[in-house]
Image (spheres, rainbow, N blue to C red):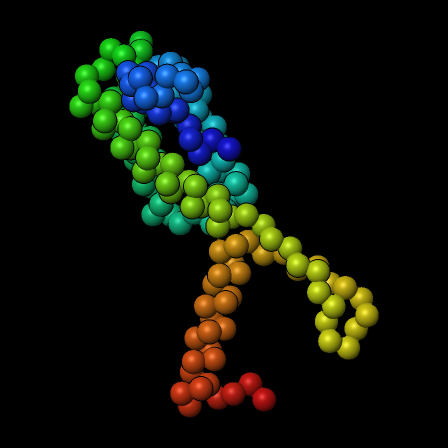
Length: 152
């Protein structure tokens, strides 16, 4: 997954990450990674549950990162303030995409409906399951409080 799309920016200048593989972040690498993220956003599967506002936030953050990296040969040539700004934008993108990927994960259940011996497979995304559970809780709350009619 392209969630952690640019390796830690500060790893190149920090000894705390010396044991990890360091990736030289330059305009070309970022362009490739950005293209992969855009493809995943557009495919309708990888980030199927991302909201339009989060999608816009990701694209805006990618634009800001791209403008900061324009004409840069190496991340080492940037001042620390710019590195921190880029790192913060990366974190924003990573957080949004991580949550969207988790919500878009497909989960299938095999149940045997009452009165049948044949198993039935039902698949939903994690977000769909959460929405359904919340709607069921809300319905139960209304029925228990006498607000809505029971489903008898």
